[in-house]
Image (cartoon, rainbow, N blue to C red; front, side, top):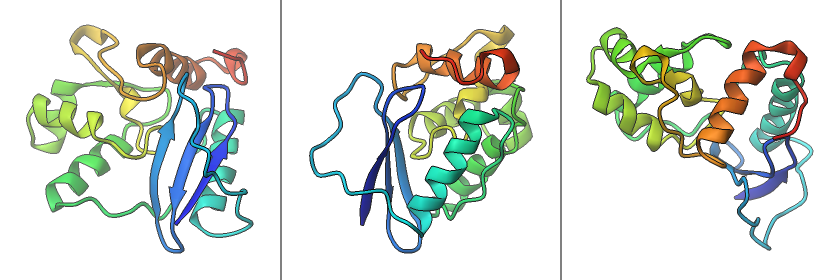
Length: 162
């Protein structure tokens, strides 16, 4: 397993990968990074995640094609796919996404809260009814979610700091 740290406008991002899969992404925000971080790999899923995340921070419309560790269940995979399908710069409410995915808003909320791949599986694009910001479990919570949404919507803010 490779664990590497990516500096970002959101603070450090911890990337976990093995030779085949991207296993997790953690937006650390104000949390301190663990001491046992390795050097950035030259190739493999972690290296590709770093390249694609750099592209995202340069251009909020960048898309991701990474070998994500498969979801634990077919239902989890379907919900992940529904979240990934929300275009950059757009948002959907928990209820609207639930209708599209043939699920319930609570299940969408749980999938977002348990998402091991924030930014890549863009749960920040899922908002409350009426466009309320809702919750976010990554980084500094709602502050991070708001930054990500602004980054994708407003090119003049790209590259700014939290």
